[in-house]
Length: 203
Length: 203
DNA sequence: TTGACAAGGCTAACAGTGTTAGCTACTGTG
DNA sequence: CACAGTAGCTAACACTGTTAGCCTTGTCAA
Image 1 (tube, rainbow over the protein chains, first blue to last red):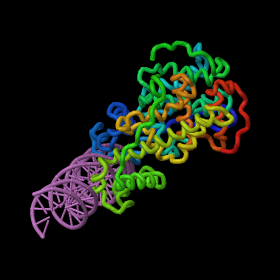
Image 2: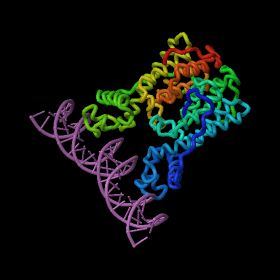
Image 3: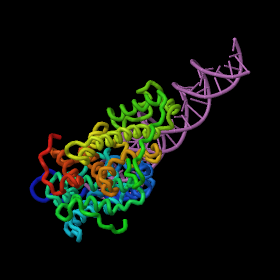
Image 4: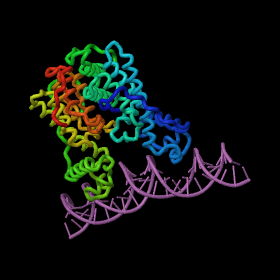
């Protein structure tokens, strides 16, 4: 995911890569393994077990583990991109910024380990489908209208999501309030940054 | 690093663990390896090479690789905590929020791989010196006076730092402007969130 | 001086990782 | 029927963190 440099017009949704039935099965099983057993369980041998073959056979279908991870992450980015674009198309009563942030948060929480993989420093982003990251991040630009504010908003969203997923916020803190604090700060048109924090719905 | 639940009075700086000369040498060499060769190069055998012994001998001094990483991260947190507390003690002309963010950014950029390690999901935070993370994060609470805004500000800082370290912002974007957008949004007292972004100094 | 003991090095080895080489069986096409 | 491609397999390699067990060195007490 990226904020694209200001360009001309809307960014097109890339077309997903074709997948054989076997590859689709492998990717599905890998996601399952990743989310249910954790990143440490996503090994070539475990994955092979899950689909009833031996590890070296996976290489008949995929170029290696990082190609598998690229496939996983591309799925995640398509899901995130769709969620974010939808959020802008149908903003709730709290305005487009709050709607965008809510979609980002919810999509990430749905598959936390995939989100961690997607945003990990080691991930080979260069191998991703061209244009996919820019398309996924486009709503941040659309909602702010200015690339630097878009980046700042995205950074807030990513920071808050990853800290929330990793349980880094203090015990008993109402995370909805933290998200509202950010939404209010960046909302601009809907609320000044010094707005009082209204009591949040339950987390 | 953590935002502590609201408590009574200042959080004391923990006292660092004692280290033998050999352990100190190992930690120093590990940091060197980590920053100059990357996370993949920080292996027990490489580290042993760097100090002129064999890998199993490291276990005479350290409980394992994760104990080594804990030592590295504790050093990083002490450094970060000192920088942040200093920043509050001597805020620049742009106010305490901008000063805090600048310190956070500069400290992280100084040892990017250590910052990545510190904030990685897999890191065994529970093994850290008790109270260290709370002390390190305290300035975020001090500067906002409210825990949820503190968390939001910290999330923005972390998000922006990690995305900047990983080169995730679009090419040619002036990151100073992105930081200013955040500082302005969260500054509250010093600038409204809708403030025009002034031309930044070079990145 | 000698004996005991701890500290800190060593080699060999183990289980687990991603990955490659090379073999074999099935399957569809001419 | 013969051939070629697909997709499975085992064995193996280099690498990872880690453990077991041996041996030398230095220290301190009897």
